[in-house]
Length: 316
Image (tube, rainbow, N blue to C red):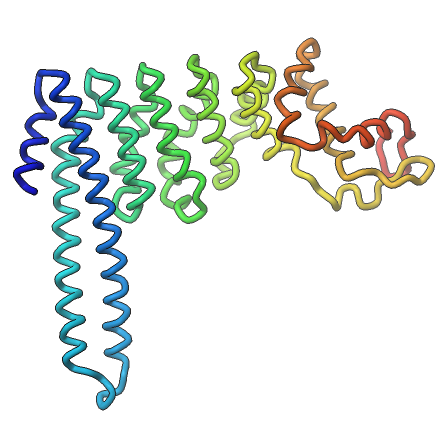
């Protein structure tokens, strides 16, 4: 194993692009395989530790000394294996990744960002740390769209996890402005991915996004690129158009007809459209929301709002 790692490390620094690309990819995929092994060892270690503690908790007359010894030996062996794997991962990270994440070849930079995202997702105990996250943060400024895209794709599953959100606070405070600005990226697939990431931040780190940040994304519902507009529509659904049954419980028209659940949402949508002052682009707004929000096809509710006079609990 040491010989393979040594060979790949040396080849990843080759002046020949083909050697450098292939050896870097092989080295990083080997790290991903080692991460899988580390996870298996970690599970076995937890199980062995639990069995050992359970056996040790028994009274002396019920405790099996030979079993305790076997479990202790197995535990020590697994701990040694885990240390060895972690040492290999650290060595390869410092010898290959640290030098290649800023390689002149964008394909190599993309591979680096893709694989580090995999390690963080699978083995977050070891890799989801600011000393590793910073490499993704720095590469968000890459001049090649595909590399920026891989950065965002690596971050998204991390932000979509309730379990991991605490480990992302410092990274988010440092790089949130860059992520929000990427919703206006010249590469449309990067902009779409950036909006998706901002939606995840909204769900799990809502307090970090300012009103100004949100307004940046609101305006994208008027984008001429449909995928960007629809992604921004999803953001609007999460931020502004969440159903609230309490808000309509006592709402009735002037003649006493009960208002439908989507009534306040449609009113908010109309208000949003009026305040946006982009009145010639209403069709873009409708298209951005029509597939993701049921209120856009609630014809009965819209008809009631147009025909029925406001009730005593409603504003005129």
